[in-house]
Length: 200
Image (cartoon, rainbow, N blue to C red; front, side, top):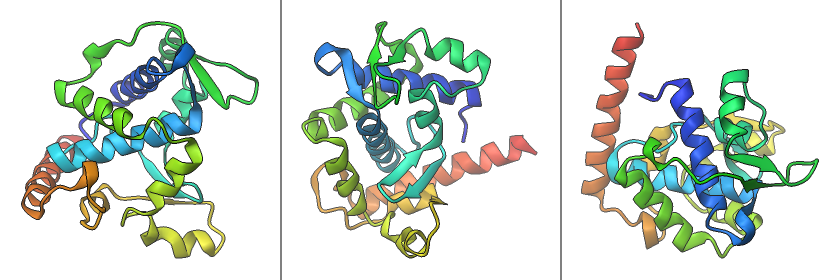
């Protein structure tokens, strides 16, 4: 991805913070926030050819989980990233099931389309709890691809962004046309090629 590790953690932190600010008391369940960010990443990828956070996603029993986003939500980060995240969010309990926003989000880390997709996902899915969101993510075509491996005993399986362009998402926010999906996928692949070239 084009996002550096620092940028990814900042965007993960601010996405978590943004969503917490949408809830009463600025408090949100950790798992719910992680699922909403996955859905926002998915939407932005399908519409604009790149994810928002640029996370590493794993298929797990309760659906996809972004590793950077999970670590940010749990404040389980390297020192520099940790000091940044602690300025914005903190757990509300010892088991870190929920967290609270303690400072206004820094929206400068996002593009206009990033915010558009975060808003759209929050408006559409914020009334669902974390388990309803997990069940929802099971219905999208990318997650069942890893179902057999998970049922065989694996706790998690690395996902591929290319799978998120699959059609058959039952309308709603993810009802992009095949033409739109193909254009977004081409853009994503081009960005990947550029990133791979400069990583050499």
